[in-house]
Length: 110
Image (cartoon, rainbow, N blue to C red; front, top):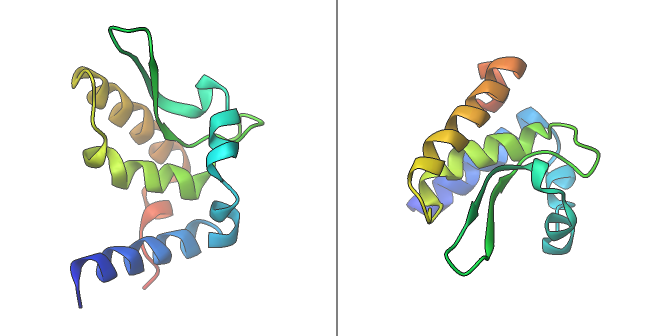
């Protein structure tokens, strides 16, 4: 099995465990752009004033979305951080949510 296939299967299993993948699929780019800053694990500012919002995991109502939280945790290392210190803050934020919902929330079903 190719690595990409394995990762995709793993993420699919996580989504099934945490909620339906159909729920996760509702987060279009337009929807993510419409989310408030509080929906993201980290927001960085560049020197030119541009904001970089990383790892959305709360919905438009401010509710924690477990499949997106699990996805955000799995994608932490893929983010191109403007300031690497923000990676640690984002990781801590997401791990606190994971502690709230239980570590098993992001484990694939056996």
